[in-house]
Length: 558
Image (cartoon, rainbow, N blue to C red; front, side, top):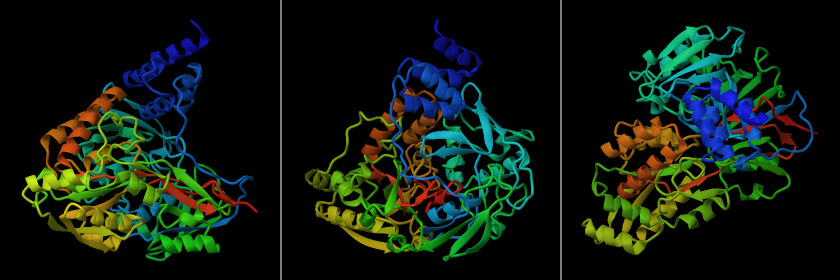
């Protein structure tokens, strides 16, 4: 037995059942190197141990990291003031209720999470937790907390009491937390327990092989705050454990932050960061080109073409699962008939749409939330393609030989208005007359998102598909704009969530994908990369495809 094999066997002996299964799947060739690192980080194997096992296997089954960032040459210097162009938050910055890009960007300036979904590595990494350990089936998880973490107002240290309080507020089914879109059916307040000042136990409603991922920065509401925090007043303080502290916040205008001298990670590079809010992307691009801002956070290719292949700017790229969902009310005619819903989906030329809106920064979707970047996506399910003749046949069989009319409501956000026009034009080829309404984000979310006959909404990136499968599609899902109720679907999703092995996940994913093609409660025509842009001399900016931006290592070189 060689030294590498002895090392792997020693890790196996000290590992639990879930960790051992991931190691065995990698050694046997069932997992690529990238998927091994992803799965291993989720079940709690430390990144140094994961890297050592991968090296011991000689890099076998290697797969290059598809995430990338572009940074300028030259070292970072401390003390800069950086100006960030972002989108206007649609409501108050309340950690319980934030559900939009502008709001979640603000949360992560001063707030931190138990663990971090790193877009550069695709790994779940320690943040306020140093490690986590599951039981044999993934129904109980214990998290060890980082010691001596202070809040940005000098109070602290953060303890298990703060973590328990934060989670119990966020997963309370009687509350109004946006995180219930993730926690429903997974975690309730009684399942969160303090074991010691530096250890918290989560007992789940059912086994969940992806639990650390769904309480990471992917679940953007889940910043840790002091016990007893009044969330409705949080906007006035922005108290958190993160690298910055609040100077000022003005709704619809912007926010300014300076270094948090108490940050556990040490002194950050920027002395000050100023966030400037814009309603739409065009003025953000203009501000970057004129030198008024240093960074534009989360753009889409459409409308920003002038930045690409321009040596004056860096483009930061994160391959992602972000997408748009066109929902059709399954409880209102004519969409009560799945043939009508299928007809709408068949009018779209997906490759043409991706090319027009995203160039090389998008991927074709197949009307399910299983994005190409997810290892569990079952790629054997046939891809839906445009077929106008079949769409007309389905409409005729459903009693609409001359088509029908329906209103579609959507939001003024990024490329969505252009995509909505494409949907309208494409549907007309089959005799479907769409009455299109594009409204401001706040109006859309308040008045139309979950009630309209047809609704087109944005979904930000997640590292695993759990939230996409549950919140908008389960019978009791809080984001179920399609009003889709299918017991078979609900059962399959529960099976998928509980599955730990990748092959099992892929098998169940295939059944879900096919069911959604048959039922078509919603249309997902594409997925696209998370893009941000900086001046050429700006580096160290870490962005996510959800709209989060982490600036502790950001700098502007001369």
